[in-house]
Image (tube, rainbow, N blue to C red; front, side, top):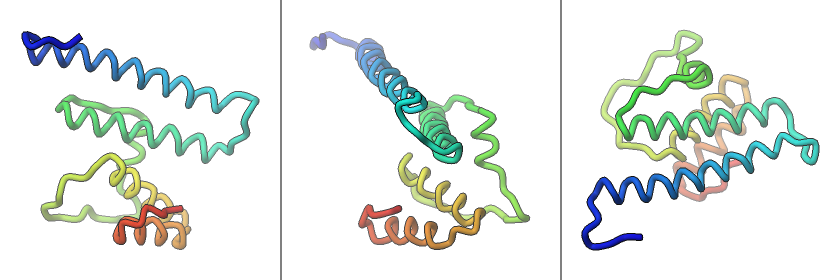
Length: 130
């Protein structure tokens, strides 16, 4: 329970515990999607794990702590001689980052129509990405 004398650290601990418990519950529910009650492709399962990994990577960056996973390392590799884009960019949200990665994966797989839909949605702000 919050009081006027609660310190910033006490508030952090209280909220962190509550939010982590909610996140763990949601992760457990996502894990249940792998049960025999549902059907998914390996690609769909990989996408779920990749999205969760990107979210954790973003949180690690916000907290300024090191984070590395096999999935994360694979998802950030530059392939086919591509060069990183230089310049200064605005800070992006987790959702923006996920959409960028999804777009790149579609392009690497030759699915330009899907990539175009995601980019069009991002640029127009329609939120109607496939």
